[in-house]
Image (cartoon, rainbow, N blue to C red; front, side, top):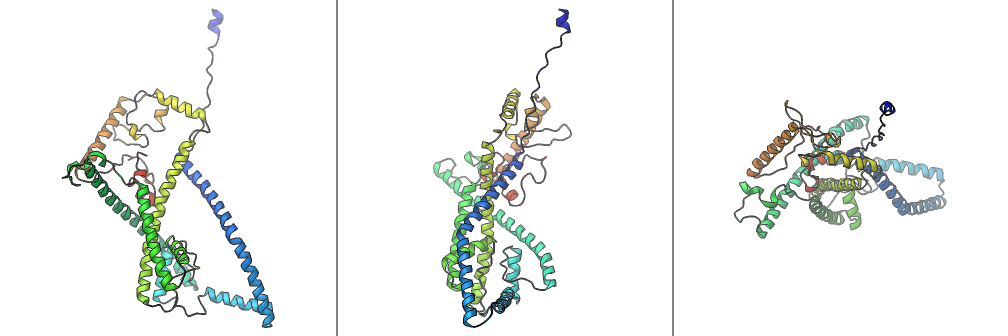
Length: 418
């Protein structure tokens, strides 16, 4: 017995702490960076395979033409190359053999500043003076920022308009199916009936509508360019995409001839097509980015904790130890209360520590849920039900930045519940 009393109790083996898993935002960023690098590599491989033979053949033809011209007209190759360098300098300055419109009159300068602030940057016109280059830096700084703001506001308006139209169509379908009364009005207190509660348009439907509109706009603009500029239709479509997406290579540029038939009408139509095309393609790109983000979330969810199964098991076991877990819908948010006490939703913190929640937290979660419900009912009665943002402790960037912040909670795939 004395030996038993003096013996030390067996020590429990301490398990090593689970390896930290990177936050979802960081993981999504790293995965997107890897996918972009792979996408760039694949694109470079494809374009190199497609264009490299044509480039080599063109260089061979040019060398043959150069030697033939030098032999026929008895001109030395150094003198001929010096003349060609002067011609390239004239091309860079905007001088062409055929008569072109003036580059720096008011219409030409207006066309230039439009390509600057929209970040298209064709490159066919560039400032040559030092004062012009310095002014371009200051002018482009504020002009590009203001234009991006305009694009974001356009995106907000077009998303709101599409949501309004699609919701009206949804209500019409509900009336036909008998889920809404015939005397239903959007501003009545019955606006929260049935499946209208929390209804939002799908990002796939919005993308389809924007895609159809962009294709229609590009086809109409291409028909105009084919008729006026004399390009073939494929080149016109190529120009529309390069311009509307603000890539702006500059190999094809519209409205550059000195004289056109119905010149004023054509320049006005060219301005409207470019403006609407850039706004529409910008909106379409942002909606497609939502789909890419959903794809990244799906990939991260599939590979979540597969690299460390012990971490996954421990988190699952600790999650079962919590007997009471109110506010399950608030797991991805943090809520700040008054001086009575701060309530943190059961996210990655205390809920995984195995600690039982207190009655104060339970009462706080009930108060928050009741306040949210009351606000939802109030807005529903006024005719514009919305999802209430319950994340009041998060920082200013938690809802997204720029276009992502505009589309946050406006589409079904960007709601807080997903």
